[in-house]
Image 1: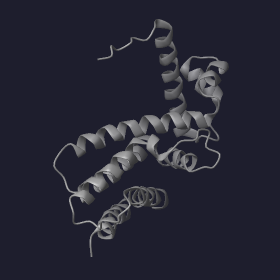
Image 2 (image 1 turned 120 degrees about the horizontal axis):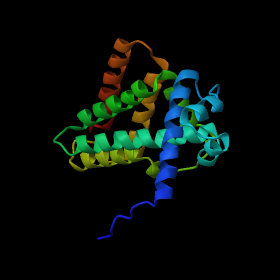
Image 3 (image 1 turned 45 degrees about the vertical axis):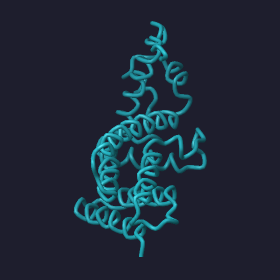
Image 4 (image 1 turned 60 degrees about the vertical axis):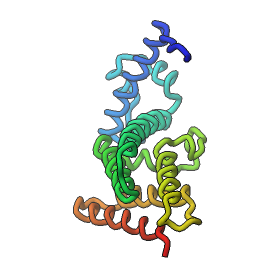
Amino acid sequence: MTAQVKPSAREARRLQTRERILGAATAEFKRSGMQAADVGVIVAAAGVAHGTFFFHFPTKGHVLLALESREEARIATEFARFLGTPHELDAALTEVARLVLGIERRLGRTLFKELLALHFSPSRPQRDEWTDHPVIVLLVREIERARGQGGMHPEVDAFYSATFFLLGIYGVLTTTDNPEARGTMLTELVASAIRGLEVR
């Protein structure tokens, strides 16, 4: 068993500073949007110098990447906990939709849309693979598990099914404001995904 290495006092201070900046930047992004966000406001709220901001986050896009990573980790933990309980695939898909909706509620519509825009942007400051995103990894495994239990077409591609489902959620949330219409559309999205996976 590997022993946990406690961070040095210097490293702990660095992490605390990064957290203060991330918190202040998130608040400013919620208020103004990423493009219009004022780094001066962020550093004043965090109590750091301009250079300190750019040491931790070379661009405002890097703040969004850190925020995306944090939110993904949060919902992956909740989704993994859900998957540890008895459930059917439709309940797992419904839970994913609920968790993604929770991100939008925490961040607000504007920041949520900016997060998605950066995620799918060709100018994304960091290249990654789908396996770097724990929520889609868990969803792919869940679809593979359900396929292995039968009742699902054996040629179902779990990765594409998971990807199309998540894209459907993002589409509903970024194009529909009405809560009742959203609820109906997300319910139908789950039902359509299940119908598309079933053996005919």
